Image (cartoon, rainbow, N blue to C red; front, top):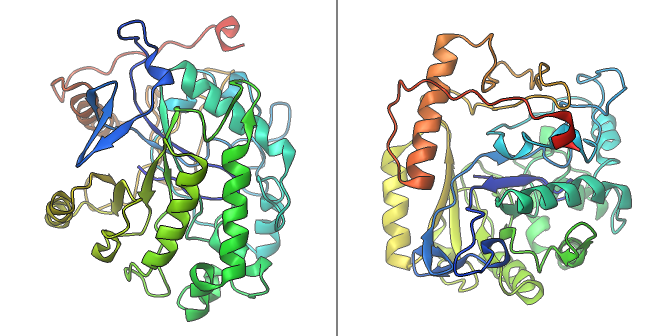
Length: 385
């Protein structure tokens, strides 16, 4: 799983049961850690689910009644029927933006923090709705705080630019000056202030702050954080510790995830880190096993995201509610859509493989890989309201 962005509040979902045990609603209980295992109400719990980086700020969907301008304009998804019944089922995607910087700034204006220290109150609507719907369906969310990249929803380059560093990913990805994000005290203070704004926000639909709501089971330091050299894992341990302590002070019941791109063993001494993450594109089984062995020795669990086979990640998008016959398009050439009657057999075979793995990981059940995909009916309009 992974989550990208600080300024758009994007979410990654992990499945959890809604059922109550001993008259206790599991949705009110936090996920806890003991050594290398996670627990919910005393029962071992595994986070299995998709990346939904666009859940609160979608570059693929425009508000109802507007012309579809996916190639030119990105808008906030409206809270309500559009996300009912499909938002929590979406899968892995990543959006690479090569358009001019002024367009990045236009889209940033729709995010949670469009300017340094300025919160866009209108942006809370989709965020609050997404968290509320996740809670209703018993879904847990892992929320990274910032993106390593210069994407449409904002990330570390915005904090750098706000501090006077004229840097963009397109021209400065290997510039050592980007380390100021981790090392400049003023930037670190600005980032921690944003984290405070995020976690102390009270959701009017749940009457809980984000820090209080067990729906958010984990806070990740960021998405694929690194330094100026690809794969360098140069996210300083001192920064990880500082941010982790800040999060724990605000939300002591939350698990903290080290979002460095790769398992950096020098971070094992950061006691506040509960989970380490890594991403594999494509799958690297040897590296995965090596990372797991290191983490077992360190007494920590791991979170990983990958895509099967030697190909880019596959964005899995669903129906564009309320029109159940309309599908959200990601337009990157790798999108797959569950239940789309126009799918090829190869696409449906890949979906069946993903479903088989998800079922085994989340429920411990084995299903046949060639088992027919269940039909997901369109929700009735009254159910979507």
